[in-house]
Image 1: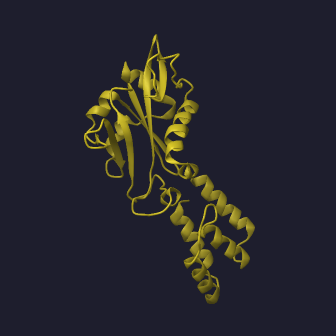
Image 2 (image 1 turned 45 degrees about the vertical axis):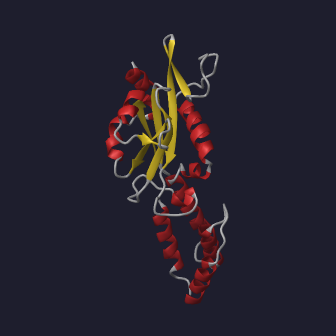
Image 3 (image 1 turned 90 degrees about the vertical axis):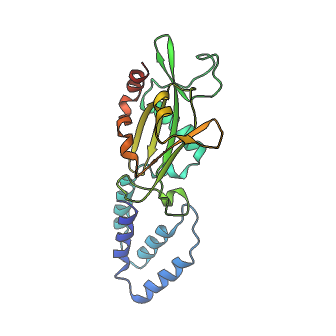
Length: 238
């Protein structure tokens, strides 16, 4: 169940309301001030409960259906830094314990310039992690209000930025939708040669790669299942 399905269901429940109640609800919604976690959806549902249009059991059923269909929606509520640096890196460690956090004990020259590493015999493979959330570029508002499901036809742009070349051996790009997470693995060489790479700032040393609904198919050859991430990186780097 996505937001369109939710809106449709609420419209069905609102339909039986007396005309006066409909006008009252619309008037209240037009001037409604929302602040997380109180928003227009919570207000409409409480209104319908109060008018005895729906039961608490119907509300629970709708809530469960929406929560189960959008398991990653909560990732849209965290700040960009926490999402990109803390959640994404720990998520990969949780996916495969072979990914480890670097330190000067492992790499004497380490200065925070890459995120994870993999043991590879006597050497290590340096891994940089980039993560983005798919959002509807047509809408304004908070990220959670612009969040998209994977099958959505709405336009989106996931901009993987602050890419520094020749520092990491491999890159993992993590793309998040409300109902799906995808992982793309590219070596440093593949990132350098990718046709979509561009300077993030004119004359700067940082680059960016954008994935949209128009070019995502071109990244299919880099898609990797989470259980195969470490093995794939080792094979590609070797």
